[in-house]
Image 1 (cartoon, helix red, strand yellow):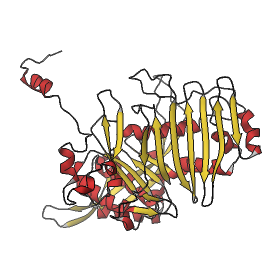
Image 2 (tube, rainbow, N blue to C red):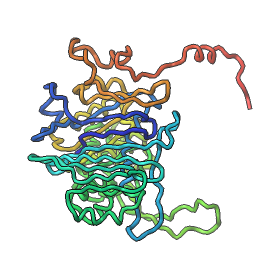
Image 3 (tube, rainbow, N blue to C red):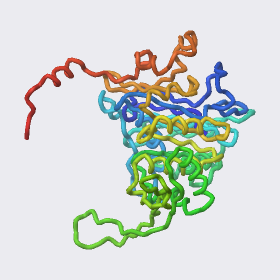
Image 4 (spheres, rainbow, N blue to C red):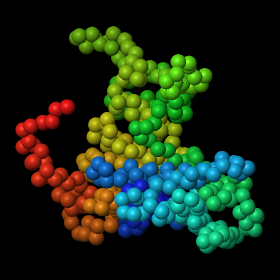
Length: 425
């Protein structure tokens, strides 16, 4: 499970920024339902990130993807091809050339792993992996660039033998994983199988998760969620289809690539003019609403992740959803039914602030006048618990008490609205 993620000099995050799923020690509210109680760590099941457009909410997710790309930045050990490092620094303050820094903490099989890495466009400059178990804390390896060569320290001598396979643009953790190091394998398994990003860019028809709708038990559970959310879908049919990859070059010939996808028909009740049921009618999912397709995808994610300990990132959570559906989904995320999955969500829907949430589950992203993203938690506001508990977080947010609100330039707005002449091309 994700414990913490720290980023510096990546995308819109110039300064060191920490995101944490650790539950606040002094918060008793909703402890039994909204938190995961471990022996040494208590984590929240979900985190909701609010902020105006362009503030950097999505860039937090993108930064985690950049770290994942860094770890998979090699083809094979015998390939001499130099792969480009996924270096995307903050570009608006002369920071190009300054190293990007990541730290991620993961709770895997009752052990806490802290992985740190620093790199620039040419090479990895620093790496460290620490493991904390019930009885001790061990620094598994450290890798440093001293300006001319790499210096390595490792607990196991066998790890040091693998340094000869580690290129300047390759993470040492990646090489350890290739050689089946037990600790590195656990971390890579999390990046491969335990995280999922749900965003607008997902192509649902070719997503492996959608193919599970061909399985009857999986489909039944998905239909339960769709019916609870009042989508009026009675049944669905999933079937495997093949399509030829479109030729984007512009030549006359077709490409030979065949892609397997899943086509889905949604079955709705049909009624006559007086409301008498006539039976069911079929609508292909490509012809249905954006909200229906997004709910179908999210329902598949929730059903598939049941008790698998996944961390699910959902960007623009409220896109195409009514607030009542958002509330229903939030109730699932924070219910006792969800024992060990985590959800990290971005949203513009201010009303969600007044849902049953703990202050350590609420985060804000603000962009400074220097275009730097600033991430902070509601839990960090010192005066939060001094005020009445029945005062709406949403109202306080709209008043500007927590920051992270869009600012409209009234002078330019009034000037624009008063213009009578409009340029015509």
